[in-house]
Length: 78
Image 1 (cartoon, rainbow, N blue to C red):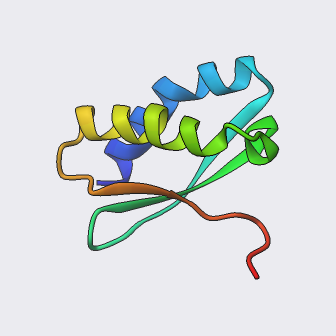
Image 2 (cartoon, one colour):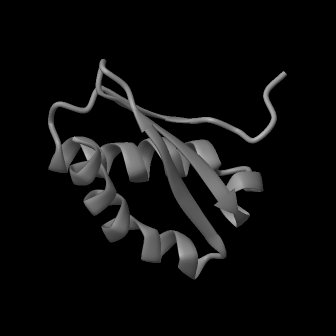
């Protein structure tokens, strides 16, 4: 599953990098939840949630229907 997720992220990555951002795959849980970290401009962008849900998650679910959701795991959690 992880390899399939990485392949989809490689398709998405150029769009994020064009705007100074990136995405890092952290984990794919047993429940098929993809955990990522938005980096660069994407990590601090006010529209990051929209990018995550309407861009990354939507594309991921289209390509890999077993995926339940995509979650951002920030660098610092309180």
